[in-house]
Image (tube, rainbow, N blue to C red; front, side):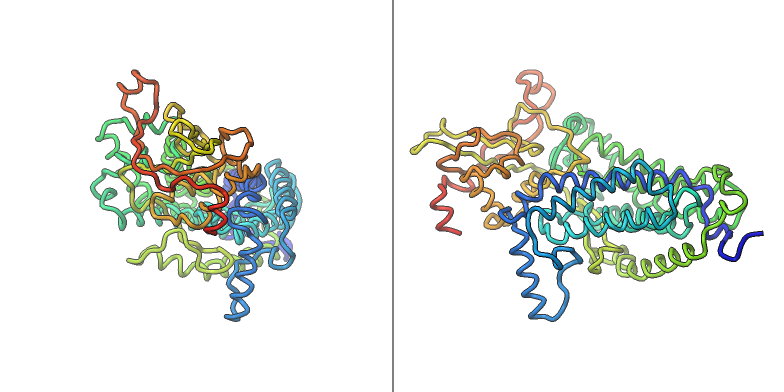
Length: 503
């Protein structure tokens, strides 16, 4: 007989999903470690006091806007409570890395459920504080996804009790929104997704190709059509099977959990192909981790089958149920968005970033344009005096094979991809050129190489190139991975004095 403070109904305790919880908690913590580490290494030159988009100036604008409108216009951040200095994000990210490591090791999970809850909520609040002031450099869908997954992970509980069923169902819903939303964006987007030609171009034109992207690009057209079909089947069809395990609550049979595990397996396979053929930060790995929420192993919950181990504390059941009700209420706009003609991609519907819209690549570009930044030390340079700045992940030197960087996020390289698609040149990009003219050391550390070894160039310029992968014959003959054609001079030669006059 159980005590009055325990609830043993199967509807509350998912006794056969212990492995799912282990993967979710440790996997999400690992993703937070990557997120905090990438912020630790990149935030100062991108959005620090002297960054490309300074956070203090942004905070001042948001503060003035709030005073005029009387409404809170900034997402929750600790930097609205304390003055921003470059040292404070360092302290925040260092603490976030420490918390992530101990969660990966499973130490908080060995205690009562409120211990891992507080650890995950601290990471969620800390990372949300960074994304709130990171502006364009933190405007990616996987930043929101990491925050939302971290919030839900806070309520998965400890190893002493089974995970709460309602929280696992919320993870299924999050994965459904992520995948089904991405599928609907594609169907509603460019014609190339409907005529099955999208991946004939995408491996070559994606933001940051990986080591095997060229190999994938050179595969036959029938294979690329099969990729698109597989994508549509997975995102628009298989995703619905994520909810089948809920029937295990009302039947003694194991088939519902088997169906859920198979659906998760299909998603993992498709995501691993994306991992192999591109660099999408932690988006694919986050999807893989979330897929394990649907992996129940019949009979694996024998440790929770009797006694207090099969129960959840009443206070924990009340808390997780309350969280679920509030969370689902916040998700209503996201649910409507999935089936809206004007579907929003990668958007938040509330300040807390819970219940977001996800999706990517509703349209696929057919050609690849790259903006190459060059500098010179000569006072009156000839064409031979110009040297290129090389980025870490963005294509540059045609002889360099694309690298594997994901799940690490190279934010500057990603933003460079958006420039030829119509992004403004007079914002952060103009500041980037100025920092290069100043030989700013933190900015130069974001790049793969500085052709001037820290010496300030006399001038910089930007050249537009058209890039494409070499075919097999070209690669055998030259050893190059890319062929590029110079198009035009986007930004003529400009020196530091001219940059200051134009700013």
